[in-house]
Amino acid sequence: MEKTLEKIICPVCDYPEVTTNICPHCQTDLTTIRILENLSFLPPVSADNKKSFLSTPKLLIVITLILMFGGLTMYFISDYYYRMGRRALDIDNSNPEVIIQKVEESKQELRWCGGFNYRIKSGDSLYLLALRFYGDGEAWRLITEANPSITSPQNLQIGQVILIPNLVELCQNIEL
Image (cartoon, rainbow, N blue to C red; front, side):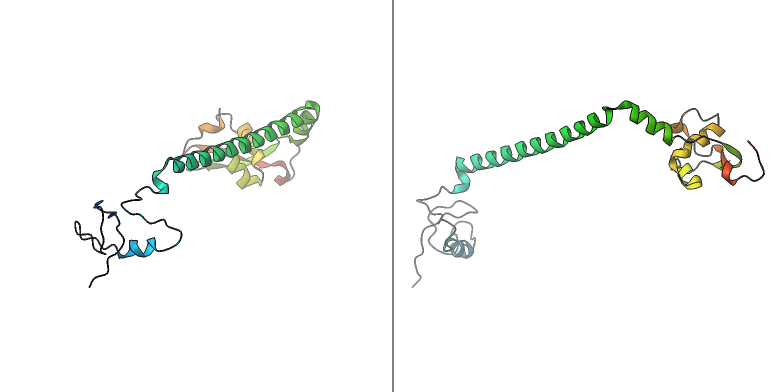
């Protein structure tokens, strides 16, 4: 004699009041669902109690609250970092004389003698060329000074030949 089980709804075809481990309508094996219903953390799904937590408006409320909390958190974090950045800029700009002195101190006198030709390749920029040949990317001004045909550092053409000037320190017996 087969044991009569509690009535459940088939999750595949929604056939009501299935009392066996096989749905008589779609032949789905319901053994796993019955095992899971016996666990304490899942409420049983039966014809009498078809509503579950997932089908109630409570879930929508919980999801809405989580999204609102996450959105507000992200807003306040980004606002904090924005204000910190603005404050740092305000501190730096509070004494413009110091900034001008720092820029003037960092400028080096661009002096050169002789040099060699270089053909521009894909991926080259004046900054990278200065970094490669002089060890300082800020020396790109020396290259532009030696090449009056370069009107804009962004307009280098592949195949274009430019002069890479030698630094004065590398020149011997030349007085400038």
